[in-house]
Image 1 (cartoon, helix red, strand yellow):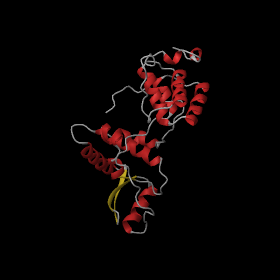
Image 2: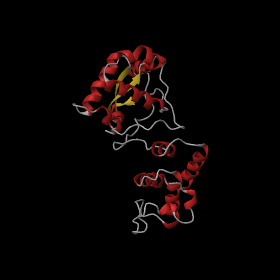
Image 3: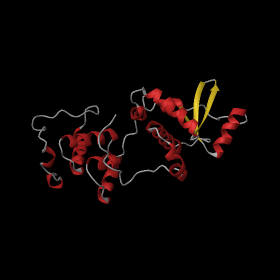
Image 4: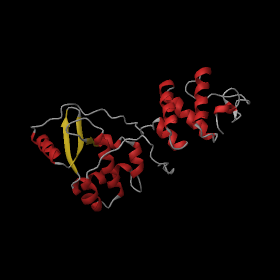
Length: 238
């Protein structure tokens, strides 16, 4: 589990809405931290979905290793997940439906709302069917990688309009993996400056980069000040 301190929300970030009743009627009744994390996680997952009705499957939840790491304790994460799902259903937050089809059996969970009550009732009676096969779940999923704005604010500081424009240009010019590695190298050298990172990317672009891995530099290149020397040194602040 990641115990690093949270560095704050980026200037540009997305939001997940929650019903007001969650705070006034539901939140006071939730006494288990794992159950609270589960409910919030499901709201977040469902908000991103396009299906109708919207649901989340047990397979999907159990494949999310980042989420599981956040609820694991004395019991295994799977046991905690099962208990939290059962408790959320008993509390009335979630509706549960077991789907049996040619793909096998899958446990589905819906937010308890009037439209979803009708949908689940229709599924149970056979009047409603899920049009598409359950989406394939990547069992090796870890977490979404932060975008370039989040990387900047987590590792350097608050964005300015000028820096934001330069970050947008960098996203067009360089692979995401390069940008992430350039941030890591700059941070490891305690050179938390976008100009420094930009020079790393420019150098990789002009001289090549070995299979996406860090280049092996000569003794001269190992000098942590190598990016602030030479032609572009005047634009790189220490």
